[in-house]
Image (cartoon, rainbow, N blue to C red; front, side, top):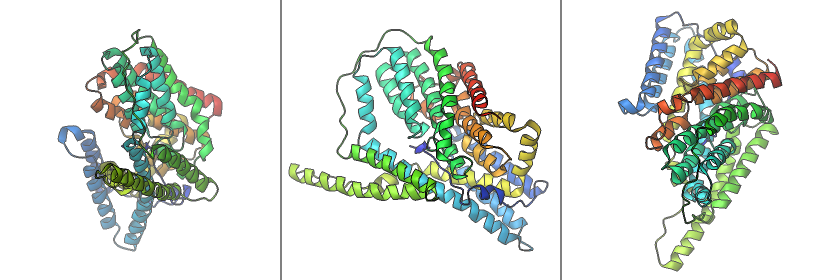
Length: 458
């Protein structure tokens, strides 16, 4: 699972806003090396899009492209002290990634630990035991996704709630399809109004473009983004109710403690950032220390129980959980940061900033970036905007946070949640079935932008 993120998420700009402002520009956009670097990035991204078809993990092409791009930069700037500047630029980019890496490792560890303790299965079992109609389940699962996503990532939230949808009403194809579309939109919208809700929101927070509580100003717009298509889909839902499923799933010992420790970790991260000025990785790594202490207690309890039962109990270790993290995702983030950071050093992002934001203006440019995130992952989109660092007020930085977060809902392939559900739904959720409701999702996208501009100005 991707983490709080998915994502919680990620981001860490070591010198906050200064990271984008002090990024070097070697002005190689008109040089063959610059052209080659851009071609490498495009080819790498095409390989990512075709990941399932060509059977190559998404981290491999972007990592290779990042290595080649920075190698080109170092080669072309190796004289007159340029190599030192290229080295410093790479180190600054790598520090940004390192903070993201450790943040995500801890986030993934917590989510996986809660899953191992049956926290999510218990939630699913509680909902399946109640005799609820299809329309009630549609709204309950959507609401839970909207409010879980700010704490968990959109991917994890969508997967957890999709298990509920498929377990309860998987036999009713129309209900399952509409509910899964609803989950994707709700999870993406929910992640947009919290600094922990998505990688892009945490990036903006760490770059000091908005403070932690500023993101709550996006709540009305995010809510409208979900409600507009949800209301449209409501009238297409079947009536009646599915058969209830018997049985319950208990949370394993220590599961509640892990949830409480996770809440404490979030509090430490927020307070450390707001009051102490420490990066988010500081609070998360502190939380990992607390989780390790709790894991030791769980391990001792399991050993005592196994000894009393005369059975062998496998040791409980957080490090085993960390080993099961999605390393392909973690390394993919490195490749994205490496490629985009390299293009910024070559001068492409400055050129794009002048062309896009200078010609269209902040509002239309941010809206277009959100639509683009339905095709290109929102992480490189947001990282590119932060590297461009266009002159915008806080309302516009919140707007790009909103559009990059919810724009991926326009297509099923536009977000991690959508891609995951296409694979997990057994054919009930596909690209074409999502596309048939893209008009309603686009209305929600436009309504959320209009509401944000009405509430906070331009």
